[in-house]
Image (cartoon, rainbow, N blue to C red; front, side):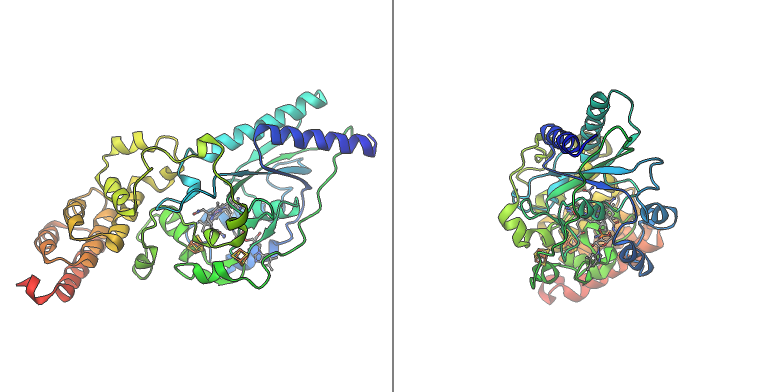
Length: 391
Ligand code: B12
Ligand code: SF4
Ligand code: SF4
């Protein structure tokens, strides 16, 4: 195949990807990620927390993109915007609609089918969307899609950073050639530090290094257990994920787009709810109501108990005396995680009306972590409620 043929085939492949709904497309070879050493340093520091899949065998596969899928030589790297122009709210923008994993995997598979139809034979290929053992931002930078912002996001100079990444790994035979994109060489952050300054938990240890264990996205989505007490207040009204370090980025201010993919538009059940009303709604959900409301939603990752845990934290931050009855009900939730965080929230709201309920709960509570939260909550109410109120 000559150079012209390669250029033509590449053009048609990219046109097909745009036609399928992808917003950015780049092509790269597979190999050792340029930021492999950064990744290793990050793991050594323990910044991955409980995300054990990133270490061990998972890390080994991430150290060379030729490892995850045998025989693959190239990747088409794809970005899909999810609506950075939408107003900020208690749920991160990426999680307000349907789960992106399956939708993007299907769309990436469609590109695979197109390749096979064009070449007239099966092509050894595999789609990756988020969960595969691939450093996707590194791969996207290598395919020319953007630079690593100081907030660690992959930022594109015409699209900002509110997009998902996916890729098709494939084996390129000798009968066809492709024009590979140059890595994105520039760093367009300059002297800006807005994202580092705005992070509510100060989770960045420096530019482009995020200690995930301090990040609200990790705390509200990935962390299975209790949220460290020192970080709860800083979560404010964020119920699921966090967009703060993207919202303040001037590249998003200028280039983020309204949502065009209907599947990513906010679900009706989330629309119009502020942090407090959404937290109250979540705390009230039965298991079957939860299954109906969150069918096909990325928010299922936190499970009902994680969402209720987050809701209790949010009420502890933005709630008032009116919310005490909901939190008292949560003291008898089947999950110790929820009971413990509800006790903390009652201690924060600190109305003495909650004291009898906490004392009653202490009589029957057997979980030692919840007992500690209940005692701390009672103590906090005793200290913080005014003398006139506690009479
Ligand atoms: C684990 C994970 C998380 C963790 C850790 C995030 C992190 N920054 O490491 C947590 C749960 C906190 C998280 C949060 C979010 N995530 Co996430 N996450 C991932 C996942 C699964 C792996 C990321 C990873 O390997 N981290 C390890 C660290 C070391 O890698 P890194 O942060 O990307 O850092 C690289 C560069 O910064 C560079 N680097 C580091 N230091 C330096 C220094 C210099 C000088 C240079 C040049 C480079 C450099 O090297 C690193 C390794 O390649 C990817 C999907 C995937 N398979 O890649 C999605 C992914 C990164 N997440 C994504 C999203 C959307 C989010 C959230 C916005 C969700 C939300 N709204 O809550 C937040 C954003 C938080 C943030 N600022 O990163 C998207 C990002 C798309 C984009 N435009 O960048 C991805 C790619 C998923 C996807 N397929 O779309 N996430
Ligand atoms: S997502 Fe939120 S908590 Fe995490 S680094 Fe960005 S601003 Fe900080
Ligand atoms: S806010 Fe500023 S420093 Fe942070 S990623 Fe955007 S341009 Fe870079």
